[in-house]
Length: 348
Image (cartoon, rainbow, N blue to C red):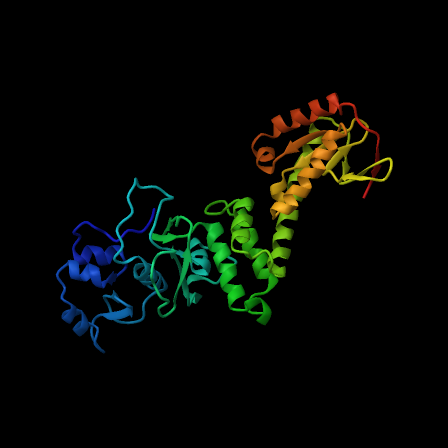
């Protein structure tokens, strides 16, 4: 659910209760509170305080971490027309919390807890004319701003929040100074794709990191490669279990295939040389760029051109339909390759 500055005439008390005592100047004005009164209330020793430009806390004392999040979101979203459309978990928004602050709200164990988060990054449409204010950093995007409701606050989807957190660290030089260590980066990426609730798929994460041009950062690329390798290993282990369950011979793992003259053909994930059948795990667990994906596809096409029967298996399908995948492997083994060219198989 996206955060919307209420357009209904809620009382100031109701509004403050909904927004944890954080309100905007526009909301106060709409409820008949004159600007002079706001100024008086926010004087030293007064009952209110100004947190950000045109954003106020209707209490004295230090704001809580959640109130700081509300202030950041209201600062970026104030005076904008409310989005239209039915209530939904994903919809258009004028501003969402992203980066490490969003991950803290999601409850990520691999990032600092909410009280330790000092800066708040807010994602807004590119056309918004906003400046950073206090601990609030504005990040603009030309893409549709999507919001997930987390404790009533509009947050970016997990994959986008992770990418923005990594961008925060790279921009601040946190990797070079050792403030953020590779182990923390790996843990955050791994948590994003393994959370039972409020996570993302590996493909979504890789796409966001690629879109943010972060895969050129060696530490990020190494962490992504490790995550992809772990995902592939898990899928291949499950396929190995299916091979055993369906009483198939054990295939070769990652052999190199060449033609008699030495021309390189491919390195399939699994291969039965006796029948010319290969298994290819989906490229989402192998490729992070179009160039890499094109290389993998060319290997697969070469195998098929030379008569190898290639069985394409996705990790999602192995998890959701293991019996169907096992049946396909058995049928492919029984059918074997068609007009198979003699290949030299080298175990690696």
